[in-house]
Length: 280
Image (tube, helix red, strand yellow):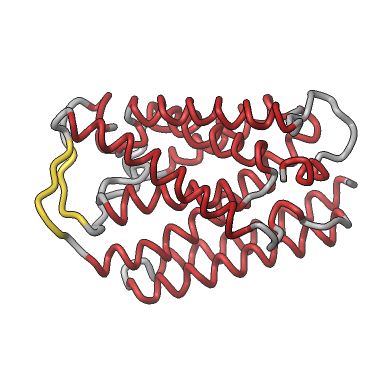
């Protein structure tokens, strides 16, 4: 693919990403508008990504095809939910997470839309564009490391960001979600994982997400104790448990990718997008 086409693809998707992100942030305090904007963001971002890739790469956009999308997204939802339950469950057993009652049902509803928008836009940008394009020239493993580091560094912009939290996210999310894409060759799986993790963290258990401030989800809760266990002000994503379970999932996805033959070696010249057919 010619360089100018790559630039055009990135510019178009980023422009829509910025617009949708600004709109989602603008209505996040209104649960029903947030739910609506979240649904629209998912639809618009997937449409624009498909259109941009199809026009610039002249191929079927297999990584966001409709066929098999529900199944892949559902598997992602299950994996993301179980991963967070393992993390918060261990923190709870150590006495560092306490539930006091119900906080905000409407807040949880609004967070469905906000987190759906965040998961979809970030997966399209960081796995659909950054990881996929890097993988063409560097191979799966180097692209996974580089895109993971960029993803972690992006979270340094959040209000309560820490270097430890950013490094944790680079491992447990940046690397893990890229590995999920490499194993499945569909963005629907990492989108499902990403959404489930974020929504469980904020919409259900009401803990901070990536140091972005206090959230009011379903449960009225308190997270306190050793920062190594709880993640401190950054939230559970900086917890040693998140890094542990995220690293285990990363290895698991890479094993699956290796068995399916969807690992791209370094300096492989042929187009890698056709690997999607091997993952099915």
